[in-house]
Image (cartoon, rainbow, N blue to C red; front, side, top):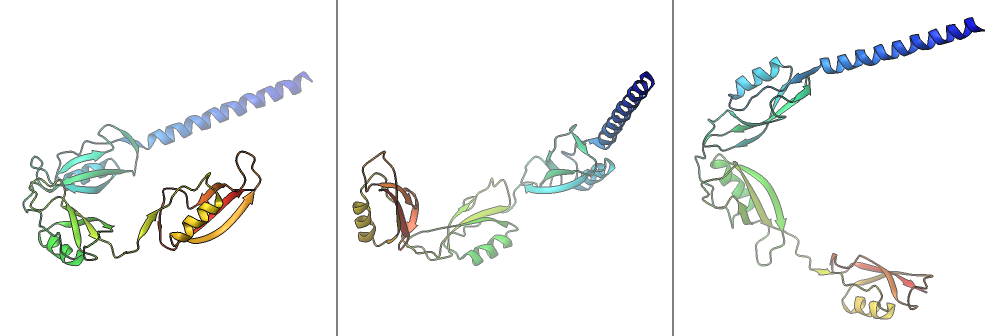
Length: 236
């Protein structure tokens, strides 16, 4: 019996030693593939790429910015920061300098989105984000605002963001709050406003008067177009 106990104890010890060795080997393997991020700021893009490759990392140009201090084609900033530990094969995201701004920002307000894009590209600039907004009186798909402003001399980026007038001319309304109002009052208001009355469901609830609205869909405060179906849940 004692011999069996000793064999079991010895087997348990050997198992623990194997597990500890495996964990230690895994830790060394993981940390063995870690490298320190080199400092790339200020380097030319080709040199930065070479330095990154020497560490087994990949250079990725994420943004390009104007800079009066950093020559064109050099690295302005990087992430992760120099000295950080990363896995070999990871990316270093960098911003590249375009040098000082050389061309002014054109005024494209009032132009169609297509014409604005052509005029922006002729200056060596790029279209950034384009957002649409309902603008009464403005021709659809024409530029109503831009960023940076026309003739800006201190633009941080070559990308010009545009806001254009939307094609959508549908009139919208703010959904009123009918909760705790009588269902008869709510139905009258919905029909008088030209909306469509949907399902009205009655549920047991003793917290208030019978026939008052508990819930409404859409919710109060939401913007809804004309003809929206409005439904209610009321107290029995």
